[in-house]
Length: 100
Image (cartoon, rainbow, N blue to C red; front, top):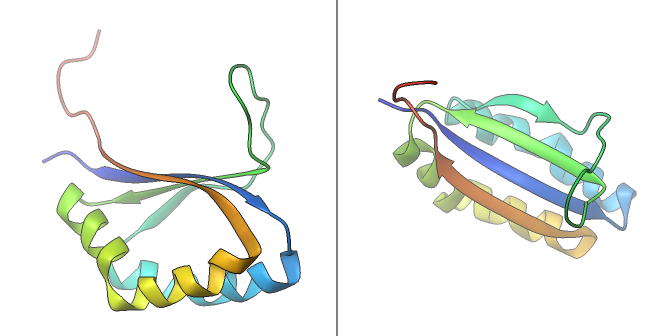
């Protein structure tokens, strides 16, 4: 079964307010077995419009990734995060097929 990922690109315009989201999200992600693969970090944008922050979370499968996002616990965190940032979040199933 293929893993799944949250790919988030975020601009934070109030870091003090955003810190509350960061402080609380670990418990929710732990409940759903999420693992941070990218959490901020240095980057260089080669194409398209960049955001200031990039995050990639890994989940055991697509259903779990969706369940985490749709959970009441995460919905509350979206309310905490939303006034302090804007961005995009994609939930995507990984590829588990033949490689070149």
